[in-house]
Image 1 (cartoon, rainbow, N blue to C red):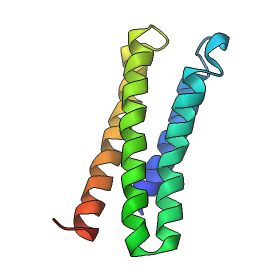
Image 2 (image 1 turned 120 degrees about the horizontal axis):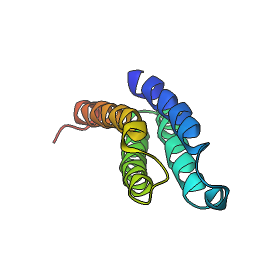
Image 3 (image 1 turned 90 degrees about the vertical axis):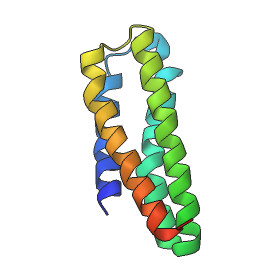
Length: 111
């Protein structure tokens, strides 16, 4: 599944990006960024193994984690922990994951 693969890449990029954060943020914003990033592919994988009905719910959770990640990345940029150019690639990859998740949700749960 492409969303899982892209989500996994996103996690690696978030870990790379947060290595440069101040040590004082290790148990604050760094932990939050990493946890919501890891949540994306983890929920895709767990939902897939549970079956279609539950899969939709887990994809929604992954989508929520993606939105949370976007907010935290913006905050990280605004407080000066990361430069705009450093976060653009991660935000772009996150946008791609969000689009894929929305597409999957529309196919599995048409409104």
